[in-house]
Amino acid sequence: MRAARTFSSSLFDLLYPRRCGLCGLLGDHAICSVCGDAFEPLSSPLTRFLRPEPLDYQAALYLYEGRAAQAVRRLKYERITSLAAPLAALIADGAAKLGLDSADMIVPVPIHWTRRCMRGFNQAEMLVERLPPELVASKALLRIKATRPQVGLSPDERRLNLLGAFAADSSVEGRRVLLVDDVVTSGQTARECARALRARGAAEVGVLALCGEA
Ligand SMILES: [Zn+2]
Image (tube, rainbow, N blue to C red; front, side, top):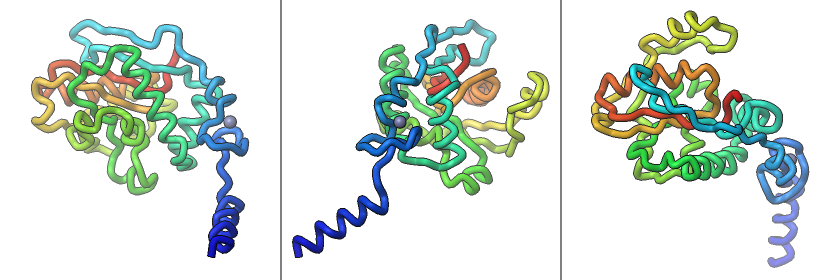
């Protein structure tokens, strides 16, 4: 019996060896230490804005290049979901280091349900998994309009593309909301989320992303 169990567990390891989701190196971690060390931290990760900006702050931890960008893309487009846990740990770490844990509501940036059906998950929801679960409100903000990808659009086209794309519910009233996303570049998506949250009375809205631009 013991021999059979050992055989089946080593067979399992042969069929599903643990590999780094980025370089393919065999090992115990979803992201190996060499790949993890290659994530380039942004030198000024936090920017604060003044009203009338809908966002109070925008934060990103790593440059959207190299291994960090590969991690985001592999999770989102190749569905390598083993990458979600280490990336969620980086988000939780970053939130604490940047002092963003004063937020009293955490909202993953939503994707439209049609995209969710195609992808099978919302990567932003996976990234909040190491933040306090009692603060996470994944249904407080919905993406009510299916939009074209923002890539390749001019700033005006981006704004128009996202106009009316999000709707928040009344649970956000008076809350200090921390949006979480995988990537923030122009910040247009986060700003549209913030507008929808503010329209429902959110007291503060900021965004924390894994990757951003220098
Ligand atoms: Zn690796």
